[in-house]
Image 1 (cartoon, rainbow, N blue to C red):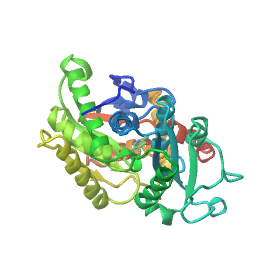
Image 2: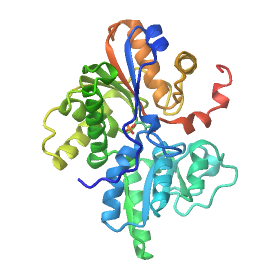
Image 3: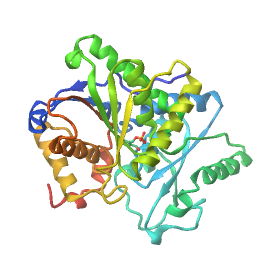
Image 4: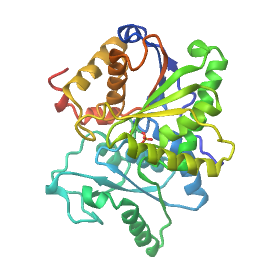
Length: 342
Ligand SMILES: Cc1ncc(COP(=O)(O)O)c(C=O)c1O
């Protein structure tokens, strides 16, 4: 499989001792929040494969989608800029005042749209932002295909990347990430032994799919716990299963999978909306370890893990690898929501 080398690898695995003691776990953190600079996070590992495919197809424009503060869209825009590719980002907004039309096509930059967090970086990279309603977003595959057809008609060569970069090809980036963890264990790092479980945030399923296949292939852990940040466990089980099937079609050696538990106990009130208790956990983590989680993905996943230990669903002393998938710009966009806890 063709792959670009975009991420700074291997990312370290650290042991936050005071945090581990406070929770009661043999806790290790894979720092995929350190895969790069402003483009950092889990998305680069997927983009290494997806953008290799885009370049092989002669693409000059990337089209993708996500929430308005999408880390994936931001990483796509920045990495695209580094490769000389333009980006069109369909970003879902719930603000009725700034949606120009149902499809969001050729939306001008709407007056008054907050330019914070990931949106600042999208615009710095020169990405064209098209705001889209939640209703139209449900039809995102068609919307992006229509946009691609429009671009083709003007002589451009677009490449459509699904939400979160989550298809079989993108997920192979996380199969390889587990190979990277295996090599670190073989060097005696992070205790040298396989983990009981890998815990990660799940938003569009591609990372969980790759980790589930990769953890088995590279004997990193027998179990993967994907903490949903929206939707329900059943929905994600189906999504992850489909992505794993796509990945296996690309790499038939991926016959085995770790035991996957999709856990929706920490998804909170809605996508991007956390509970006060989750926000307090985010502060606890930072003060006990210096690790900065985000309120949309990693903060929910980690708060969920902590609660599972408190309730006995995850046993004290377990050897846990928490995959830190990044998301810092999303935190910075929610400064006001954190006012009470910081
Ligand atoms: C910071 C962060 N963590 C985790 C995820 C979840 O990854 P995935 O979309 O592959 O489920 C995302 C993206 O959705 C993300 O931006």
